[in-house]
Image (cartoon, rainbow, N blue to C red; front, side):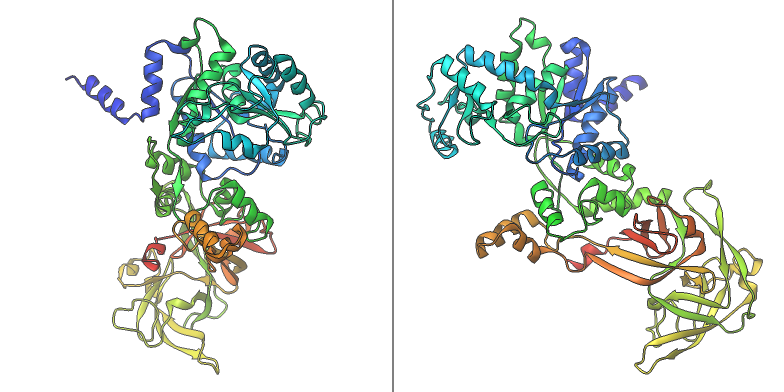
Length: 579
């Protein structure tokens, strides 16, 4: 086998199953060798990490095969939709690094869908049903038992046409009647048992206002919208597998031409992104926001893309995570630690290293000249030789981490303790000489002496000690608030746990959520100090607080009140704590 053939085979093996399907369709000349996808969110909430997987696939497939991915808002339920969500969705997609070809809305096709529905009524393929939702559900049967016909199934066409018009004039109240497709009440596919395709919703639409009172259902609007736009590959999650025959049937009905098989949208399904310690239902996320259990949709504990962005996740890290878990035809539960690992890998390459002390205790270098200040050079990112350096000031009085000192330390303790040497990063080797305490025994001040021949970069600095500690100069630092974020839920599978709590205690979702929330998901530290270099840091700057974790500047931060969010710790401590 030649080298070229080997590489070709390797590339083929690396394709996910959706890419294989697309290449097969292209090789067979379907849809005129075009690739057109769409990302179709409903504007009833903010995008979450699960949507990121669909976004990466929809836009990635189009890019890989020289096609286009359009953004289409599925705005067929005006009671839950809002332009706030529309704008937020667009911002999140662009932040992830993608740009749509065209912006569409299902509401763009309301007239075409209405006309198509009238055509179906005239052809005897749809009828108005005046039964209650409960009666219709009962007549559907079960997966093993056929359904029973509605008493309105053979209603005269003219009656259905007249009532359908009234559904849209405001004369019919919500829930009083629906339009159903007449298919097969004995079909083994429950979705074929005369599905509802239109219902009455008396609520102003965010784009069309009061024009419509009758709105199409998702199953009716989705496939037709794909067809109207020229979509070739309609990529959905696995719960839409049983919907696919209905999707295809409605496309058959709306197109009804000889070349249908070669020019039609085709639905393919992939697995959702499921994460442990995460709840992604928009309905439940809305409860968290409305009840004040979190601080808005972009709370850094939320699984929303805007929440991850505010917390300091990079778009590249999310895309890398999605690429790592891949696409399959079976559902799986992914470990949140895998996402955090992808974030650490990415931020290690791009974050600027800075010094910050989040639980300070004063360190006095007793033999360092009073009033003297030295400018120490600190490398911005040792992983990036082009990242440059910045200056951090060194002086007689410093802040150090309280946990880095122990008065009576065990034998293998390599931090600050009386009689032991450590290196202060980018500065000198110092030896601890003692400490002061308050009346309660709390350490107030640590004392040490420095060796002037051990300055970092000097010939004498090659002397090795086992501990290196970070610090900031007391007179050359900035006070800051630091928010330590952790997982919002203390249970691994909050969805199932919530269902179990609700059943056991006969309570609502809110009460169940309160039982599952991790009380340590947010700790706010207000007495922290950071080096002056961070005075000009901006939201979305990626930082590593040395020896502590990855952080970024929060949107609440001001020049007079700096606020930093912990993105992720340097190592995975959660797994050890929760074993």
